[in-house]
Image 1 (tube, rainbow, N blue to C red):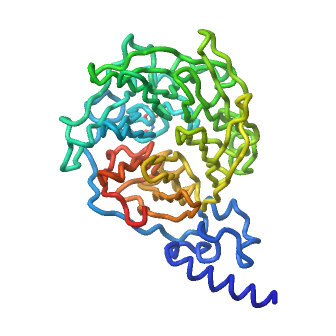
Image 2 (cartoon, protein in one colour):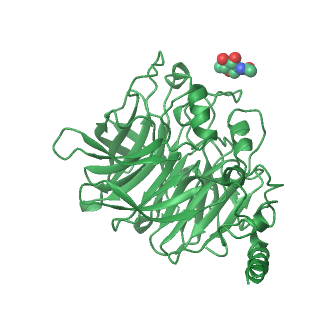
Image 3 (cartoon, protein in one colour):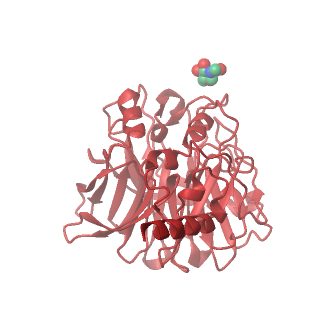
Length: 421
Ligand SMILES: *[C@@H]1O[C@H](CO)[C@@H](O)[C@H](O)[C@H]1NC(C)=O
């Protein structure tokens, strides 16, 4: 009986592995089947970091176009090193968090605390920006500047370096943006609350402006990565590490230590009130919400996407956990098809080398998680088109997919929606 189960599981594993055949461990451990008798003893760390992955194939790419990027180390009219993208599907526009200061022009570490790149003096030389992209009207998909607007924040912020970006549609057509901002405040102070969440309003009637409403700062917003709004004056925010730098941070990462957490904040009363909503995550990273109460977060170091449900007191409990076989960064959500697109790094070390400027490319990977829970890879790249993917956002009604990588200075990529989405 055991032998038969084993054989059946092996056969299933091999069949299910077809789409994942470019990984050495893939055939025996893939997102479709989860643990099987063949793979149950392979440590997840090895699978998620992709150390045994031989190569990453180009999968699901159709009509992909890479845009003209902005320059590194100076403000430009094009987005560059976009970490997160969020679509507002009713008006067919997308918001993009761009920052030319994440790395230096010579590709060494700049200002990006999410990667422990802590050159605050360099970050203070200029700002990133949120761009709005009119994807509904850009029929050629080339990201021409006619369809891109670099939004001016009013009143201007002292320092703006966007990380995670999410939106909340409001009354009167206004779209409220919640943006993680790693403020560069030289000289660098390890203990300062330099990273905050900015609340900004986009009014289509004045489409070049982002009106600043609130800067949310709190000791529980320590290493913010991404946000999930729950109302005009409340949100969840992930903190990706306990340690901001050094050996302790490295141990936290490679030990897959559960030292990161999600904070809930409310500023409806005028003062900011935050609480720890869920503790003990392994590298809490990208966040999203279905707008119906479910909160999603990726565990980058744990290789999982987690669906949470809020309790009455705003703390969270895990309602579902999806095991992925790579390091997931951000997670897109298409409300039309109710599909999640966790996006990340199938070779974690390559991503680190690429970010640090010691590797020319790093591969990219996107899974879908369907409403029924099925999980599979729909898009991937060996790194030549797009390195170190951090976000994949889809409008399935217009056949538009936008994909970008936080340290890829070669430009945002637009593709058709991949098969199997
Ligand atoms: C790269 O540029 C930075 C900033 O200008 C500089 O501090 C650093 O020494 C340079 N590194 C290399 C290897 O050229």
